[in-house]
Length: 353
View 1 (cartoon, rainbow, N blue to C red):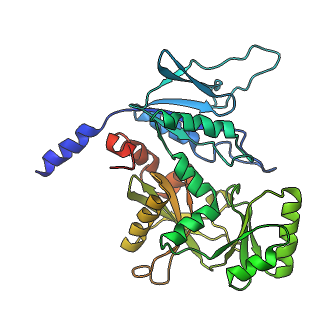
View 2 (cartoon, helix red, strand yellow):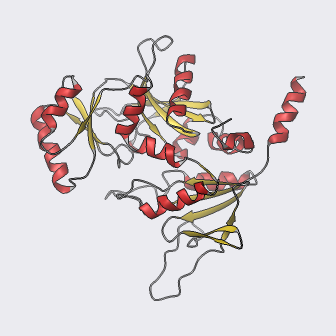
View 3 (cartoon, rainbow, N blue to C red):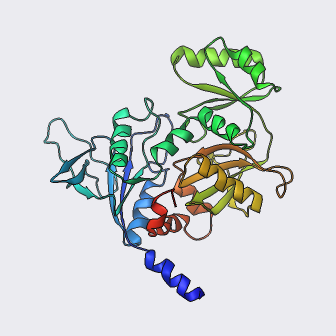
């Protein structure tokens, strides 16, 4: 009976097409950076190795329209190094051959949506919404993207669903620091961060006093009075956990050591990571959190409890567009390949199964 069951599962597996939409100009820092730190090239290369039909596009200049009932995607071309070729105003604008997309066999991976108004355009969001209206499976869906890119909205979802998470308060205006700190009901130090728009941990600050909190908030909102800011209680830990949830299963987890003299554990900032085994409670909670944010493929970031077998971990945040590079370096095998293979089963193309 087991062999017959395996045959049925294998029979469901079908090759498919992938559209990877990235944004190579998303970096906003004045430091040297890996041009593909998100792992987009890795996704493209491993997809090709699996025999999948992969189309890479950059959000800049991309547009879609229906021609004779077929959904076509237009994008600027890429060179042999995988860099998008932006138009020269002195020359004729060139596009790749339009790519035909069908919701029955094409997955859309918007890897470069970023933060609206910061590293992204509302027009790009609307284009992805257009694909959703046509019945395409989007990884992540725009609902998941919205739930995760606002840390304060994530906090509301967590507290409404009984997820353990650091106490969080929103800074409403430049003179709101004292009120928000009282609402937080904790002691210094605390964490100050943008609710949206941080990049690889940059934008997360430890605050030691009310004087510092007030001054930093005033300075930030002086230069961007619409930037959403939150403060959180500081939970001391030597490491945090990135649990990778794909289609309702934990496919791997990384133990990320906090950088010495810092509070952050981002691999891109130099933190060390290694594979670790989760407890059953950590696994079930990670899967539940992914369901809460409507995530088919997410990175759930946890602070472990003192009794990992019996007490739920704290959830710091959920990453709806996790980087594949760190996974490949830290986990056994090729987690990106595992992720791509899981979507060969069409049952995994919807959360409603």
